[in-house]
Amino acid sequence: MKNRSFMIEDEVAGKAYDARLARRLFQYLRPYLLFVVLGTLSLLASAACQLAGPYLVKEGIDKYIVPGRLEGFSTLIVIYLLVIAGDFVFRFAQIYVTNYLGQKTMYDLRLDLFSHLQKLSLRFFDRNPVGRLVTRATSDVEVLNQLFSTGLVTVIGDLAMIAGIMIAMLWLNMKLALFTFSILPVLLVITFYFRKKMREAFRLVRTRLARINAFLQEALSGMSIIQLFNRQERMRQRFDKLNLDHMDAYIQTIFYYALFFPLIELIGTIALAIILWYGGFSVMEGTLTFGVLVAFIQYVEKFFKPISDLSEKYNVFQAAAASSERIFALLDSDDIIPDNPAPVWRDRIDGSVSFRDVHFAYKQDKPVLRGIDFEVAPGEKIAIVGSTGAGKTTIINLLARFYDPGQGEILIDGIDARNFDKRWLRQNIGIALQDVFIFSGTVKSNIASGEENPGMEKVTEAAEVIGASEFIERLPGGYEHELTERGSTLSAGQRQLLSFARVMYKNPSILVLDEATSSVDTHTEFLIQKALERLISDRTSLIIAHRLSTIRHVDRIIVMHHGKIAETGSHEELLQHKGIYYNLYQLQYKDQEVAAPEA
Figure 1 (tube, rainbow, N blue to C red):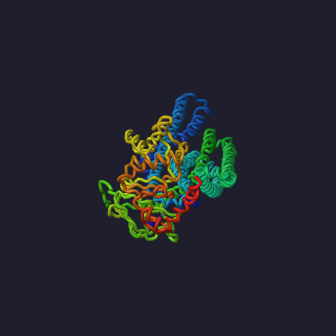
Figure 2: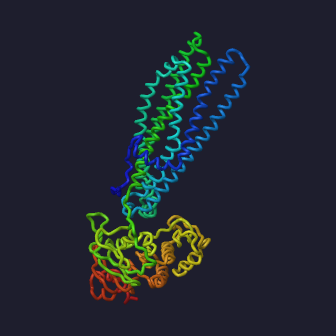
């Protein structure tokens, strides 16, 4: 399959009908074909009732009112009322069934989209703004809901109504019908012209809406930085431009709608005038009954509504084609870390880790890791240090298979990590990151990582070992306290403690700490360091840190420099070597050493 890891674009015009997209959309309709059939039959029955109404009026006028006959008139009125009631029932059934169909297909499609998004590699999310992906799963899916609920079935009904009215008018009086249809060429020209203009306008609206969503997601996520650096006015100006572009595009659609529908009404009025002119003379001459004239007037009033509806439905089909193209482009993206079709399964990881000649680059022309070689024995404590951009975090990303190396291999217990099932592998690797992500939900569910029905005893034990129980029990509701998005009501230290409790609950064989204590105060760091002694006990541990004071007692320190391993050894050995590690240590502690005599 062709790799579809590129950025999902919004500039898609699409055709109103695309056989390939139609076949794929049909796969989502297939489970609900019964509802399609019921909706179509209900709509056709409603159309039949609407077509019968004017004919019954014509019969009432010509057979009963004009001759002055009362016998049988009551029966005709009852039939007319039954037709009106039938139209109500069938229209209700059609609206309910088709909207239910739309909601079910939208549910399935959104679920498929979200499930697929969770399978994609981090590389895909590096290239695609989150706001744009949110637009795919919300606005674009909503457009398809309009297709299924108000487009697909109602088009059949509109076509049936137009055909039925034309047949009824030709049957009642062919000459008058042909006079009425003389206005149709003008109607078709106007419809095709506005169809093209509205298609372009709708495409602009959807493109600019996606841009607004992408900008909002970025701005709201970084609101603290915006306020800290006083960028509110600059961001407001950027949003003002995006918002104005969207408004201008939408005003275009309003303009075309405001012009199109009055024109349709005008043409309908002209058609009515033709009927009154020709039909009136025919009634006076006795070549046309008054009932037929009234029926014609009613049919003409019904005739132009489905025509204008069809033009609007064309825009629905156009928008749906563009939305489905973007959605399926996302579903077809195969930027996925592949699983071995015959994965290796083990009861538990012992914890040995080996990097053998590992090369990696996020972008092909900018290597991040170059020939990384090191081994970690089960239970060994390894620290990885180096300046920013040296490749420390990339090692962790490769170990957890968020990315695969471009060259070389990573062995866990002597087995290439690519031979393990990703889910199973990540269950055995615990990672505490510098940027802690807290989900909305209870403290309990966050510690248990969303596990269904987690054991309270295990949750509290994990929090107590880490030292998080003290602040948790002070929260309203304790472990059942509801946290806001990203844990914004907690301090940085409290969020970090929760992330440690999450790792402790998981009880992994391999532990990774990525700058895990860099954003906490001294007291919290003391609590964490104390808890880490228990957390790293009997576990293979890889610790990434800028604070060299936190890694003095590890078994071995690996020093990274420009994507390569520059030095390896214990804290004392590296200081004696007086290389990169020695320079980093001097930079961090020279001020403390100078200040010491004054104390």
